[in-house]
Image 1: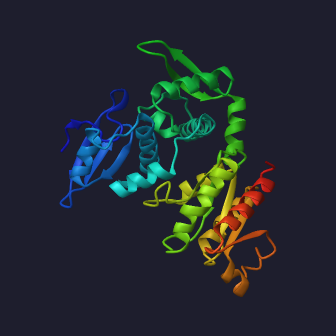
Image 2 (image 1 turned 180 degrees about the vertical axis):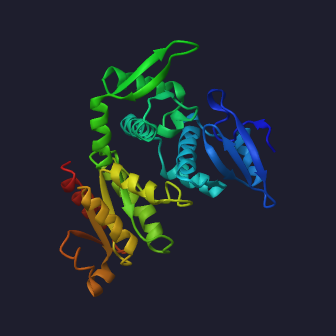
Image 3 (image 1 turned 45 degrees about the horizontal axis):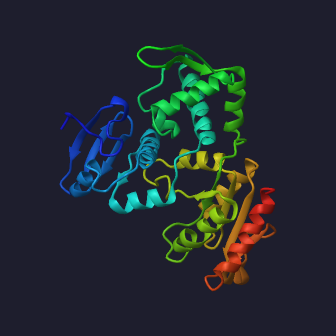
Length: 320
């Protein structure tokens, strides 16, 4: 099918278009949306529920999903949204705050201008989804503020509505762009490096570690499940670590990926906090490169004790 339809997620925000490009035999459908990018959703009944608000989604939730889908699509592989996946994303993710949106905007403009050598003629239809704004109006408002702060250089036209044309970065903007590439931007979230699909660790992180961080210091804690693990994840992972205020690394399974992510974060100068299951730590310890580092031990017999130690260590590490 190639006819323009209503996007189940963004509902054709700001006049954008969407196409149903494939209806598969297993009741999943592929979409190509100017805002959300390419993604898959199913089953069919679930699609209809979202389209017609039988499963109501607030505007901020639709914006969050658009941002997640757009980010994954631009990374090279579309996400698949199912009822369980939708619930997980809405429960564990939030729309980027204005500070993070600003970082996303500066990075997007810097990347595009560096790639082409020319200013951006006009922001694309999915600009607000790229940076994680609620809608195009709020994205343009943020761009206007950055222009006033001499971060962006741009021309402004008032027809038919205020839009920016010929957008680039000022010298101050380029300095900020380079600083963010080096990881000097610190967002309001932390990154969790861990082994996935472990029957004990997965629920422990979800039910204990993430709530402890949120309740204790007011920061979200994200892992690669929160940003979609399908497709090419290397660049997404690096961006998440680069933009994080801190990184928590679980060493229980001696996971090589978690060790790599810890090293990457250390290299960027991020505060890195190590955690490990107590019985494993007492028996085997951790790799010699980390066995001298502060490690908060956890046991499912003492969740509350772990929470207190974790929050106290985070507060010291972040000077809170």
